[in-house]
Length: 604
Image (tube, rainbow, N blue to C red):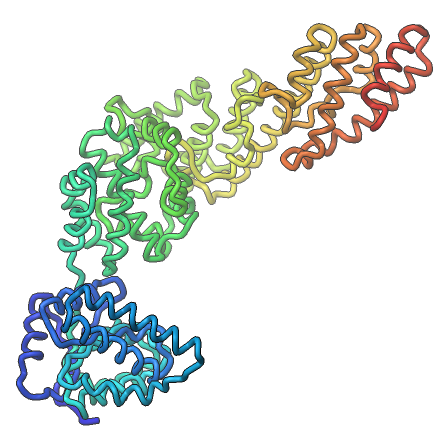
């Protein structure tokens, strides 16, 4: 290898890169060096060079991706040369025919186990002389970098070819040996930068009229956010823009003004870019830092510094909804519409005081803060807040304010205050369990870090965690009270409305209320047995039918584990019924009960 005198890395505009390449190709004598086109993955290097080569004849393009030997490179060169000759002689149609012929020849040779040594093929490839050869994907070759570049040097030094190498230098392994060989082979390194406008225009050209209009309307926002992201991978931008169709399908957006749509787009773009570049992982948003402590900012908490228009405490949609959209590709129209309509961006009516207090960072003075705080505190003292999730927000906020001496009450005092508030809600039936209220009944909701589209402040404060534990216990108590009340109602139904009892218990209809609740364990089996003499034959049949249908749920994969406690209850109930059949004083009832019981439980 001959050592070149020019190994400069030149950072130019893409137009100037083209000028440099044209100059390199215009040299009448062999330049005795190769040119490297460098750029990060996704920056459009390959697209750039193929576009450049459109008007250039007499060239061969070779990808080194997955290549593990020189023999494989030789084979690829021969194949591309063969196709290039066919194309030059017969045009595009001839090229397609040549590809089919080449594939057929290779298949025949393989079928008859005829070995064509690629080293011998090299002699057939002398027609590479005087051609421009492009070697792409240098960093993705499986060969030793010295061997790869040594092979490429053969064409530069011995055949006098002009050679363009395309690579992402940052990803080239064995950098020490690479730089030693590079110094002798590569005379110019031209860095290709992403062309933002070209990428966006290419997406617009292939988009529907509606998306084309949307992108054009918000073009400056898209360009600004992508530039601020410092992401140089245009494939990511292209992928995100192509997914905008689903974003625009959200019907409630039609009710937004342009400013609000633009802000929602900003959030969508930022979260999409950061997740694609690995800076945002599923669940990160739930752990945003609200504390006043000086900590090293990382991940999601850094986005405000990176994107001036991004406000991490106001994402319109809840964190878990963004997680589903960004990471799972999940767009549920009803849930998204509900959250958007509850957000401050949807309507112009005044924001509630508790939300103003949540946004205390927007206050310009202590007086403004204390004025808002007093209004919220007065409403709390008057027990005007009934939504338990607003209470959680206020508990977290107040404890946070206490820690930084914005208010006088200590976190311990606040813990006691909010626990007593929960007791009040329970007493007045505002905090109560209902079969139909799946949102309230889901105990795990208290473990979430947000509600009402806003994160809970004070989330890491000990007293706040204790308050959440108190809430869970209160929730369990209300559930227990509710189950006992429902059990008593079911006992009453057995006598007064056995058909409704059947519907609720059997699991046979859509109105069955207790498929996922072991409600029978809350009924005193002795009380139920005591009701039996009050029932006629029809009611007895419906009762035992409902219970036998119920036992079928014990083998259902969805309910088996939940209803497991009822198995013991059923066994005890059966024993008590059998005892009544033997010992009850009214013989005619014993006969009726025994016949009915055996009809349903004989095989169990």
